[in-house]
Length: 219
Image (cartoon, rainbow, N blue to C red):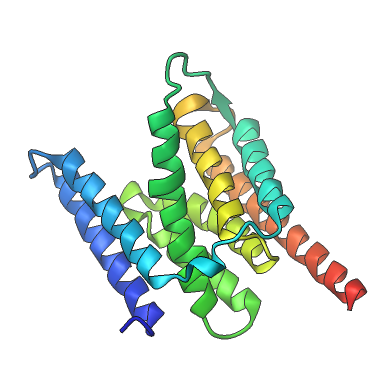
């Protein structure tokens, strides 16, 4: 079964949604313990499935580029406030290892490496599935995470490694959820979704075109 990565992705997807659904139901007295247990299982499972030799830095500049794009869109459409006293090394580790690394291994690693068809097909499939992975947070979050997933999948297709994407992903989550969280929108919510999604689409498309043109010049 280890040789059938897509089956593992499907099982991972179902397990995560069921686990998060149980947590949200509030029926468990020790919800945090269940959450940490779920994250550890996700990480160990991915580490067992994905070869360590493929976990590399790669083209770090592309991961940095997409981080800049996402944060520009965030700061342009949201009012952010420094959360004084919220700096926590523990939080940073949680975002980097148990969220960012887990998601990069599963989506930009295991899934994207095994989706058939052209690179563009892989990018789009991974972006949509990554968005649906966040469905329990609502359809608005599905849209924004699909857009962000598109950027990250493009960077992966352009040679950004799992380590580079993990650092970008973890930094993004930590900045926007802990250190400098949004406190309100600068624009109406419908416009926010449109601007954010189109901004990610444009940024990812420019990166992909640039990479292809550079590759053609080299060859």
